[in-house]
Length: 223
Image (cartoon, rainbow, N blue to C red; front, side, top):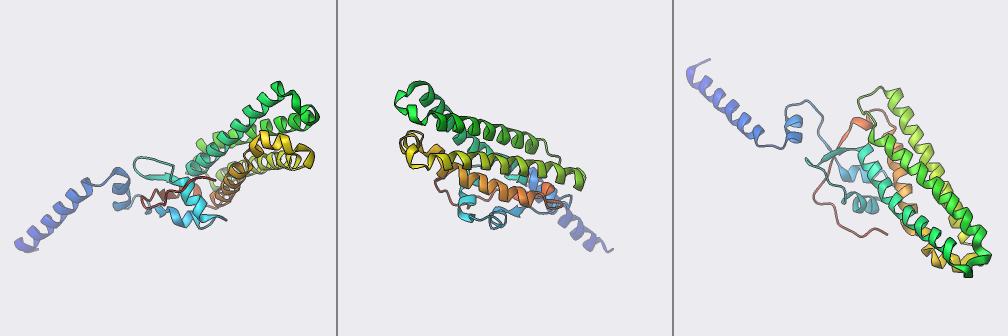
C-alpha cells in the first residue's frame, strides 16, 4: 500500500474510533456488531390490540441507556396494573370494616376481596418471573417460564373479571360506586396489554430482543 493510501486509511480508522467512543455504551455494542440493532417501540406496540395505549404506557418506562428487553417492559405494565388493584383492595377492606350501610353487599364485597387477593398474588408471581428471566437461556426454558407467566396473568384477569361481574349486578350499584368500579377501566386494558406482550415474549428469541425507548413517544394519560 502506498504511503499516502496508508495514511488515509489510518486517518479513517482513527476517526471511526473517535466517533465510536462518543456513543452511549448501548450504541457502541450495536455499532461493533456484537448485538443486533434495537427494535423501535412502535413496532412492539403495533402487535397489541391498542397501539396508542401501549405507546402511552411505555412512555413512562425509563432506562439508561435508553434500551431494554421485552420482559422488563411487560413487568413494568404489570406493576402499573398491580398498583390499581392494590388501591382497590385497600378501599374494599376499608369499606368492609367500616361501612354498615353495605350489609346487603357484604358477601359480594368479601368475594371481591378474595378475588383481588388472588389477582395480586398472580401479578406478583408474574413480575418475579419476568424480572429474573434469562433471555440467553434455552428456548424451551424461556418458553416454559413465559408460559407460566401467561397462565398466571390469564388467571389474574379472570379473578378481576369475576369481581367486576358481581359488581355489575343491580343490587351492587352502591358498592360499585363506593369502590369506583374496582378500577376496571384502568386494570383491564393494562392486563390485556400485558397478555399481548407475553404472547410476543414467548416467541423464539423475543426475550433477547432489545427495544429502543424512543424519545418521540406521545405522552398521554392512562385510562
